[in-house]
Image (cartoon, rainbow, N blue to C red; front, top):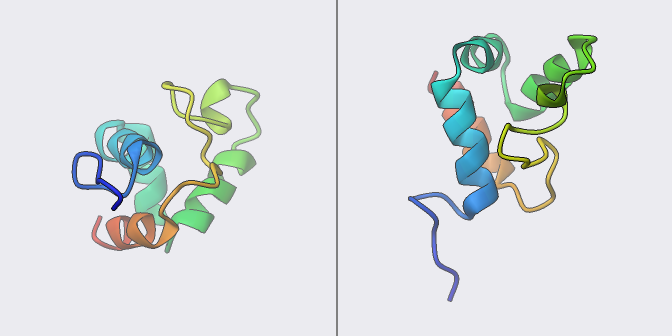
Length: 79
């Protein structure tokens, strides 16, 4: 039986959702998109070599294979 992490599928999904919901720039970027994939593409399109373009400040990659993309899509739709 898998356990949830603060209501999310796992720590990675929770961490990504936490940063999107609590960082004004990430929040606004996510709000402009239709889903999580669009958000990640927009991060890459910023053209910066900043670490935030590739991962959260807690070192969870935006494209981590463990992410619950469906839950993140739902969160972004609700923004």
